[in-house]
Length: 192
Length: 422
Image (tube, rainbow over all chains, first blue to last red; front, side, top):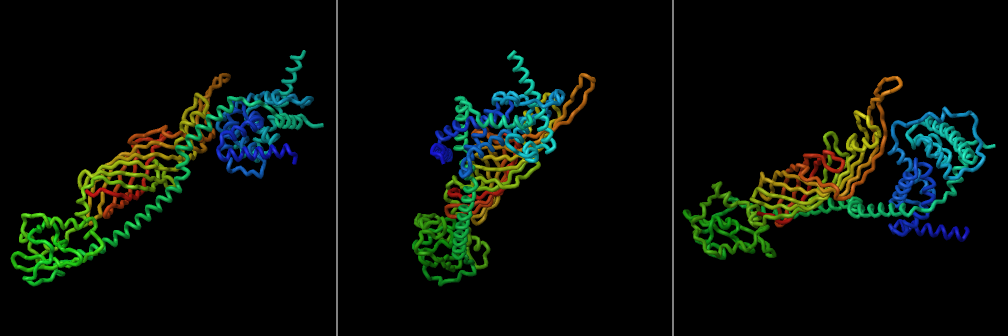
């Protein structure tokens, strides 16, 4: 193992041991180390930035409360990611409204021709698109395409049927295509 | 060539795998505040709760052992006492009229009220003779003593015999006439010295270590698991049969409530202003640790040979040290929706699922006199202590806790106490 990587791993173990003992300095170190990673997950699931921070802090609270149950033979990042996703889903379940106000625009604006993703989007640009997606569509897209969960698993997580999960994913993709085209047109228009 | 969807998914993964963001200092400040708050709550409430069950089991064992020792000791003492006092007029045998009375003092100083006849003996083995004034007959009561004790009976010191040294106006001849056939003689010779003398100590204050196990209930439900309580109760005897009591007991309950307590959370989750007929269904667990402060009065209705039964009534106030309410619920409601295009109105029924996990800090809630305590106690007195078995019910007079649940309890309390022998 690379010396720097080994040092990093030892440092992380030390921090986690400190967290197990409830040391404030270790907790702060862990928070600082995993803040960006945590935000990268939360931003994709939450409907806005404020909610992302709330989910992140809720997740860290769970980490500090349950750090003793963490199996240090496995990567901390994977364990933390699972907590982040579960917390985001809890957040969604608590805050979701019965009636999802679909505009129906995603289907109406379908062109039938898939656009080409000719340039890589930045995280900021992706979030701009995500924030315009309805919550269930955004969650389904992330859970399926990014995290790799199956539709059956997603159905259990979101308390929906697997068919609804498939439908949500399909609608999310169509809507993302349309939003991407809108964003690209806007950029061209601004450039001109 | 990859489709847009696949490319986009790859783009998302890549962009967020390399996501960098400087930490907002306010984020950590907020986190710190939450951690401090959690530590405070833990210090006050979670530590006792985490160990409440272990402590409850330990206290139960301790109390059962104490109770066992108490009963065994009591049984032994009672047997000894019964042997001492188990003479009846038929056990008495006439003695020689002219045989002098073998008591250390002049029997003329004895009165019938001062010392019961059987106690006329003196250690180590004495024959007390009661002279019949009219017939000049003397009956002998044999009383056996242990040399190594200062007590003829539990709670009765040899000092009692000092009374015989005090001048008494009542002559020996004023003792009631005792014959083998007389029922009065039995009563005179077989009083309940244990009861009478232990109650002559004139200490009105007693302290009880109490341990209870109980089931919580609401109007429709009974908790599936028992709660526990432990604490100290003091008791002040106003008269021989009337007492006042007050105390403090830590009381822990875990109650799985069906379709109760989540109403106020439902309103937050409905999210529409025109919702009507809101009903909530769900199962929520209520966990609470409270300081139960009972104040009451007890009336003794039966008393014999150190055993007594009393009825008690009073009020309990609750100071909550921890409350947690969590569960999953579904709220059902209807809305009257108006379609402006068609000009028609329609009623829609909706449902929505939501989770609750609320923890309330210590001392946030105090419910004064919210429970009516009704109890019946069976008390066994020993020399210097007593043991009480007390079934009770706490009837809710109003709603308690932050969830405003009308909850009572019923169970049994074991008390081991000292003092209090008015």
